[in-house]
Length: 276
Image (cartoon, rainbow, N blue to C red):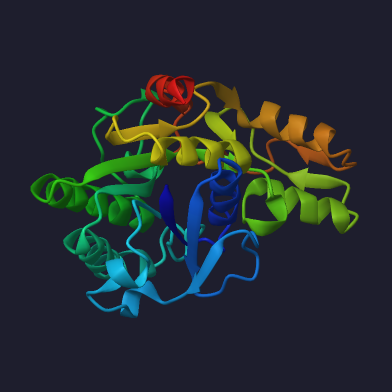
């Protein structure tokens, strides 16, 4: 298959590109810069927000578009999330108008907002951040547009991502930096809240698996399906990387808007991967 990946130079994107190439698909890797993209890919340096309405042809008429491009993904209340929303919509609708028949978009569990328990494709959404609001709005708009224009929409909803930690802004990155700086303790919460953690390489595998399987559409949770406490996962991470730093439990209060336990229902993604 000929697959366009936007945001190909990003934290998730470069792993998705390599995963698709390993599956022996042809990849057009698109981003503002492509310095860190797998050399096997066809690289396309382009600002999609200023692209013409002929963007489908300009990106090589792909069979599938995996839209990962997103600014300030780690800054959940950035004004850019809503400021960029119409540009995302214009790009995606232009691709569909040009002839795109399958669209995969990176979603987030932050579309749901506060929730306790397993999130599935029918869980109501009440986002509590600019990031969640923008993603949820784009999802709703693209459901309508794709339905009207006979385009398969697969909305890959991600949960808590780790791995390749020098290239993200998670708590795992901060722990790496603190340990490297020689700090003995890392201020921490109680760590009792439970989340659904997934490595970026496994997430890339799941996204790639979705893209080459067009029989299932709609919201697809990309997750482990297994809740684990933040304390347990961070302690595991410290042990895995041989770090000397210790967690200082209770230094910060647990945030009142964090669910005590939230995770993804992985039944659909497990079915897709087993079929592949």
